[in-house]
Amino acid sequence: MGQSMGGLDFFLLEGGEYLERLDALAQAPAGPFAQGDELVRNARAFRGSAIMASQHGMARAALGIDSCARAVREGRLAWTEATRGELIRAIDDSKILMHRLRTPEQGDTEKAEAIGAQLDRLSGRASAARRAQAGP
Image (cartoon, rainbow, N blue to C red; front, top):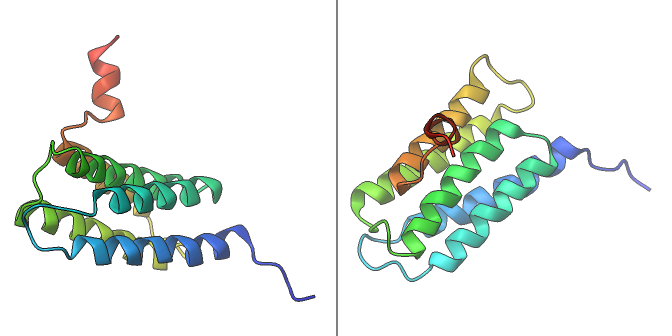
């Protein structure tokens, strides 16, 4: 038997596939977005993969992608050029951070968390910090 794949290796493979699928879906032109379920499914799968690999920064970015995907699917966020551009940028930035997971640079986790927070704002979802400040 060959050597088994480590958790990080598996995440890089699986998470990279989800990001590629998300990127392909985000290329849809502005207007009615018919693939909302597929967008949400892949965002959640990416997030689950990041959580299982204990990649918390990437999981936070994935949560933002998921928030944005749900808002688009539910019609709370219009699929405009601006929305499309923000999601593509976030996915591209996530790909860059994924490529550096073996040898991360200082601030990479914070960058991933910022991706998530930016997409939360775009989707209209309050970030965890803002929800905590607001109280019960």
